[in-house]
Length: 305
Image (cartoon, rainbow, N blue to C red; front, side, top):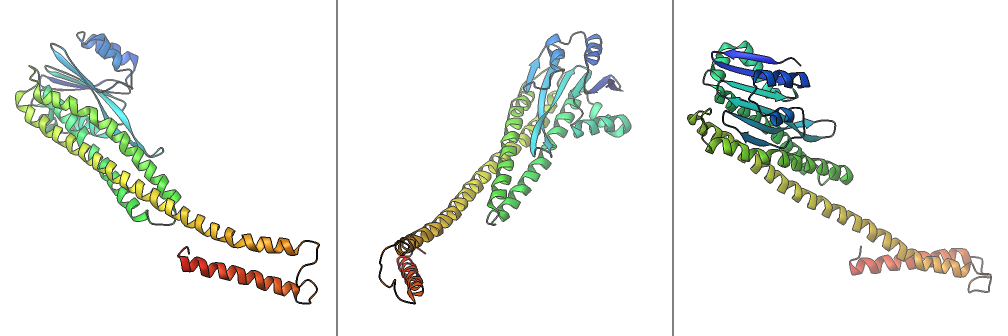
């Protein structure tokens, strides 16, 4: 994709989606002071979140969750940010809507452009990270809605589907925690460490973003605790239902055992009591029913049924 650039006064914001080797070469020519390893990282989509500091610029790699409706899991979407005196370069795969919308607003809306770019490059950095972090909460609220739905369905008979849904939600929560936790260190560093190309009055704003990330991690931990409790409850219910089924089957087996023995005895080709009477078959069947009824009464008396 072609490199898009917004120039506002002395501030330049360059945004690249789905970067290509040619885009990297253009960046190398435009910003020759960028470290070659940082430029190499732009072509990789598996970089861990990090913050590399140089004398005249910062290189920030962050990952934000992006919902995958097919696999029903949140996947990490990477954004790379160069920020220095008078410029910001953002690189992503185009899947992060807040970043794209913010850039488009700065292109088309003079008021938003002045608000975001009128106070220097560090304000753009703050605006980008702030929008991306706020984008986390709708995903967390969706997870919360899924958990509440599972709480209502957990006592239904379709335990197999409930356990499957619990597993999907739990996997998604673990993925969210793995994605969001490393971002805390980056934002905390931006808040506490003074840099010449980062406005000092922005530390409060970065602190606000850090508070949002901490809130997000607290929500995730709470969701994980709830889903663990629901999983334990579901497993207990499944075990209880399985025990009930096994108890009924055991009772049936125990009742059938003497009946099978009796039918086996009267099936032998030897002289047996009542064998010569006309009502022998009816008497044997009656005896079988009597034995079964006696055993059921005894099981009921002992509380086994």
